[in-house]
Structures are given as C-alpha cells and as structure tokens.
Length: 499
View 1 (cartoon, rainbow, N blue to C red):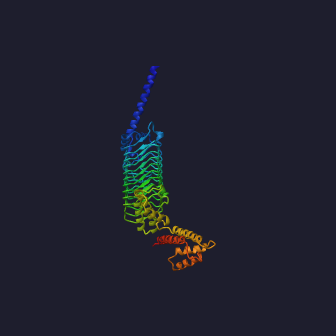
View 2: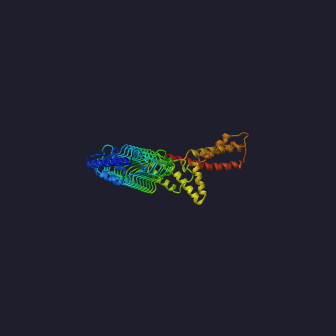
View 3: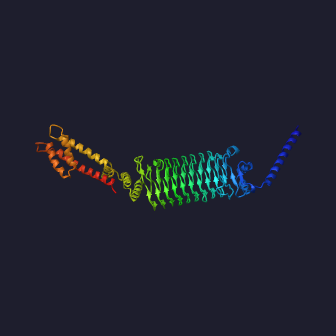
C-alpha cells in the first residue's frame, strides 16, 4: 500500500515538472516584441503586474516601446489573493506610446482597485493614461512623484473612496489634457502639493471633494485653461498659496465652497482669473489673494460674501471687476470684526472707486468705519467721538440712507406738533396749529417760515403776552435737530445721485 502511494506521488511530481518545462519552452518561444497589448485578461501579464516592481519592469522591457497596457475593467479584489493594498510604486510602462491612441496607452478604465493603491514614482511613459470611471476603495490613493508623459491623462468620473489622495510632486508633462472632471473624492484630504502641470487644459469640472482639505500649494500650471467650474468643496480649507499659473484662464464659475478658507496668497497669475457667480459663497470663512500678482483681469462679480475678500498688497495691472459683489448684511456673523478688516475694506473701496462704482465704494466705507470703530473700542474703550460715530451710523448709514433721516424728521415734526398743541392756551387740542408751527421750525431758514411762526404763535396763545418757556426750549431743540436731519437727507441725495 505504501509503495503504491509513493509511486503515485512520484508520478504527480513528474507530471508537474513536465508541465513547468513545457511552460518554460513556450515562454522562451514567445516573441513579446510582437505583442501590441499587455492585457490584464492575460494571466501571465496579470501575475507579473502583481509580482512587484522588478518583475513587472523586466516584463515590460521585453515588449516594444509602443505597447499598450490595458487593464480596463479588471476587478483586482476578485483576482488577487492575500493582498490588502496594491503597491505599484516605481512601476514603468512602455515609454513611446502613440499619443491619443484609442482609450489610452495605459488603460485602467472601469478598473476596481479595492482597498487602496500606490503608484508612487510610477512612470507612465509618453502616451495617454486613462483611469476614467475607475473605483478606488476605502484605502489611500498614492500617486506621489508619478510621471505622466505627453499624452492626455484622464481621471474622469473616478471614485477615489474615502481614503487620503496624494499627487504631491507628480508631473504631468507635455501639452496633453489633464481631466479630473466629475471625479469624486472621499472624506480625507486631497493633496497636489508642488505638482507640475504641462501646457494642456486642466479640468476639475463638477469634481466633488469631501470634508478634507484640498491643497495645491506651490503647484505649477502651464499655459492651458484651468477650470474648477461647478466643483464642490467640503468644509475644510482650499489652499493654492505660492502656486504659479501660466497664460491660460483660471475659472471657478459656479464652484461651491464649505465652511473653510480659500487661500491664493503669494500666487502668480499670467492669465484671466474668474471667481464670478460662485454658488453660495456666503459659507466661506475667508478668501485671500494677498501678495498675489495678476497680469490680466480679475473677476469677483456676482457674489455675496460673509467675509471680506483680501486683495491687499496685490499687483493688479488690469481691471478688477467687482460688479454686484457685496458683503452680507450679517457680517460679521458673530459680531466680532477682525483687526485686518479695515485694511481689506479700504483696498476694496479703492478698487471700487477706480471702477467708478461710487455706490459700492460707499457700501465698503460703511463696513470699514464699523470695523475701525470696533477695533478702536477694544483698544481705547468708548469715547465721545465714538458715540457721535454710532449716532451718525444709526441716523443715516454714514450718509447713504435717505429714508432714515426722512422718517426721523417726520417723527420729530409730529411729536413737536403734539407738544405745541398741548401747551396751547386754547380750550381744545389745536393739532393743526401745532403742526404748522412745527413745520415753520423745520423750515425756519425759509423767509415765509418766520412770518408763519409769529402768526401761528398768536393763534396758539391768543390774548397772552407770556408764552411758556417749554415752547421756546422745544422750538430751539427742534430747529437744531431738524437742521441736522435735513443735512443728512441732502447728504443722502448727494451720495445717491453723484456722477
């Protein structure tokens, strides 16, 4: 019995050895140079792809430089075994792909990578790279220091899962388009720190970012268009500080931001920049373009912010469009002005004046005065001139309002008319006489007003030689207040219809 089992085992080993020899002879006879596609459906190619950097790179070198790599539709979790995270760090792909060939020289469309993947330091060659509609699981997605060639790079409609997405120091060379249009990022941060883009167009149209920060610090953009139109950002910060943009336009039309900051400090813009008509920009806690330089026009029109856009220390060589840009009436949301608000508003007022938008400049001036008043109160406490400032604000919004002083004057006139009628010596309540006398005090500078004053006094106090002192006191007080309110009304008309 034992002899039979031993003989059976030896037979099995002999069969396996012959099979390995047969596979080896087939591999030796395979002419990889003739294969134009490395397909994920080929078990040998799939095994080599998962075998590590050395095996894969050696396998790729056996093929021609114009070979396409096609792993489209591959479901890695179903086909790999005992691997929690895919690691393709340092992988090389065929170097001389044909640009705009088919779906891409490196094709991962509709691939499912499972629980995280790393393409750190990968070299994707010179052809197109297509990850459109790919699915990344809950793990991290790492493309640090990856090199993309001259072709187009597509991450269209990719779902990056909830992991950390890292493209730091990646290079997108050449004039090919880079598309993250409609891509969906997870809840962790997304980083493109020091990324170098080529001269092709760059699209993040309707891309959705999660709750994490989005960082493009020190990124370098080429001369293509950069469009974040319709993109949605989470509640964390969006950072572009020290980024450099080429001659292409940068647009954020319709973009939506959460309760975070938008930072474009120390940036260089050679093309047109537009933040026009962003979706609900009131949620932004801060927007800063401080110390940035613009070689062409800047457009921030059609937005209502709940913060003060910071354009201080900016270099502007063309027009800045602030049409219909407003600061929310709820600002500051917690009642506390920032110490830099006065400086920011002064810069916005300066730009509005340069655009001949007098009404907008007045609006910025009102908030500027309130900010300065708040900061002065914190430093010195309340002073008499601050009380006058507050009264000026309440009475006429620093000369902007016509309705407020007009209503105040109307109320003052009616109240004083009632007082004069009450003080009258007549047996009834002569409100009409009191109103005429009150109006004569309002328009005392009119020659007819003086004669009306004397005549109405005779009607209010007939047959009396002594008029109560209270009437004289209120007449003087009303005359002073009326003069001030009339001045405020005139100031409001002057500011409203100033050319």
